[in-house]
Length: 255
Ligand code: PEP
Image (cartoon, rainbow, N blue to C red; front, top):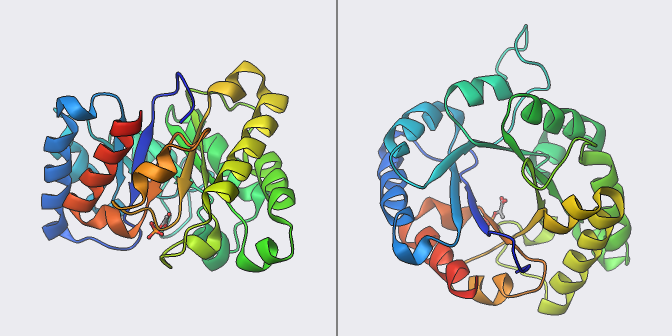
């Protein structure tokens, strides 16, 4: 954790979840109002098909609902895409941009991610900008170089501590059960903090930096205790209400 930063635990459902998964949203929404979770923010990013129903279900709770991606434009001839404006219209609060699966499956570059982040901020929403090294890059000692390049290339100059969240997700840790060592997470997050401060000054000091990659109830407290880790981006474990709530509780317990 970073002193004075309110942690965020965000769940990314990816291409999972049909209408019967709305019960999970409801359970997490109910839990989000617990006193024990008053020190953190919780967010679920279901598929776009469930977004509006999810925000309707959770409007009286502390749980936020967000999108997993958006187009760079507000509207237009882009079959199959959705815009940040549409997510805002569905009462979403955040949009994830630059997830490694988007970078890999859809060839998204840092420049595209930056444009998407810009579109998110222009719609009045908060961008969660994902960065992280591949296994090969880590093995060849390039992790910090990759983070430097991706931060510079994916985060817009308009970023502030209020409108932008960074999510560090080592690609090799996503969905694999592998987690970097405490030392490696500490080094990566300290490096990102220094880069953000160098570029944004005080705003960089206050910007949330999440860790993502195989966060589970049994490792969340240790990961969230690391300096400059200001919450989690959770994939698989966010599909089960009990696991996601346990990660929220673990985060709150060290906040
Ligand atoms: C993710 O996809 O952002 C992620 C971190 O997935 P998981 O928690 O399943 O590793």
